[in-house]
Image (tube, rainbow, N blue to C red):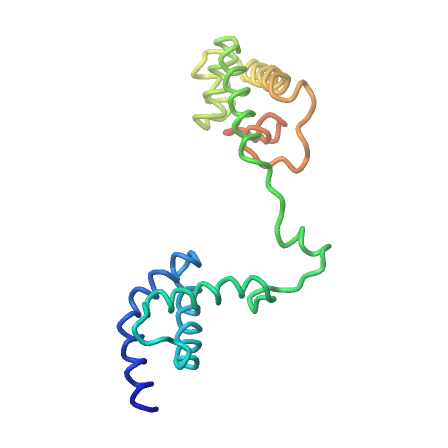
Length: 189
């Protein structure tokens, strides 16, 4: 290593903190940032003769880093995994958008508020508090069959309000859909 190259390496080393901070900002994570800093250092030290003495070294290094980062998107990444399209859905299952769940929950709460007090209490005791049908019946002072009937009718009313009376889709994952489909066991809505 020549003396000029050694001095250049020392100047670059003094900018290492700035390079790391800029790389984290570009990549969004520490691991990729460290890789980008290493690539930038290699590129800078190999091309040190292209740097014009007296100009802004920090700006030159940032330009080298930015160009490396942009170029990483232009060529295939070493992090990409080739996967047949039919396996993609299994690897990345689709989730319903969060907005739909929020709208469903709003509709459910409105329908819940419209239930008769007796049905609402039954839903709360069995679905929310986790009581068995017998425990809810004792608490409400009614036969177990009445609890089952109230719960069934409450589910029907809630289902009608949220899904227009039809059964929710089989792939439904939200708790509201599960409970409204009648999939809950005693102790659950």
